[in-house]
Image (tube, rainbow, N blue to C red; front, top):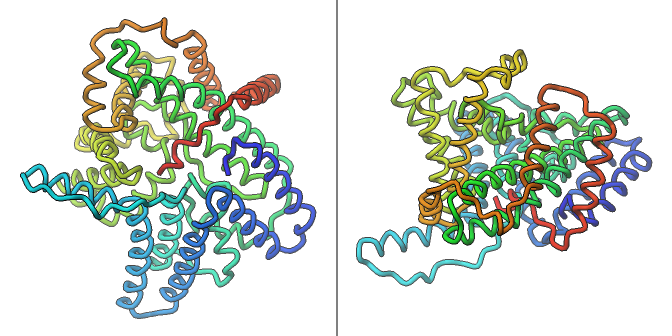
Length: 469
């Protein structure tokens, strides 16, 4: 079920009313309703894959109890390995099986050994599998590390795994944050609900007004890049940068806002990343739930930055390459991750990667200073160039796209309009106001709702980009 669909606009108030006015007296009934609603929400896309979520919930529920119930470190480790093999096995089969087979066939062909590809399968990628497998796997890891005690309430645990607001595109929640909220009585909070509605409106605005407006333009430019001038290709890359930001951060805002309606607080997933002054700051503000997941469960276990510069560089490349590969079974995503690693390494070597922490950002207005403004523009520039590889169908297409940027001439006769640039300005202004915690006047919320309603009249509603990951 899509957030920007008529079905969701019927589904949400129905579940909300049942939750607060029918089953509100019993926590177990509230959790059961969340579980049923989450399975309906996910099954609306394809009910067959509900079995994967159920199986993942059952496996990690019992593995968590088994790890906690043993004092033998070897036994605990075996259970943890089983959890990792199960979750990564699911993810590997559905998402990466064909990629590895095709890459192997291509590798043999490159050395002159032609092999007929008869092993690929017609596998449908289950929506959200990259998110909920990481969520359940972190539960087992935290129990193994003795940072978390397992729950014996299976309904609450299954509701945590399948919680519908963030099920298919995050944020990737930690059990230490969301599970305790499942286990404690929730009371209706008017102020929290108002905040939730504001986030839903803001997220919808970014998705259906901003991102979906850019989608057909970006698709046209990237599909026919050889037909356009350099200036248009630059605009195409910039438009994609704002499309993916509006699309993904919009989903996160809707998810966080929807969760607030039911009394839950999810982790922040974006902190105005396009106001970042360095790659390090960008990754502290972009897809935070994923970057912190890799930090806590891959980077730090590998030794982080405490194993010397050389091994530290290895660890940096590891998390960026794995992060790229997490996004999709295509070499373009791996190259995208590698580019970010190369951009990050200089500051890592010089020890400046921890500059511009959130506290320091809140104390000054970066746009009042030429230095900070230039750093913001440069960071956005390199991030946008990297986005070309993320969006392109192949590495070859990405390289030729960049090579095509040889002039600043823009094909205004095609589709580039003033309104497209205006949308970016509106997004940046509103984002900056939220960044500086400037209250947005009520009239702007009304205008956003009107713009959302107008945009929903489009014949084609684009799916969220991160559904494919």
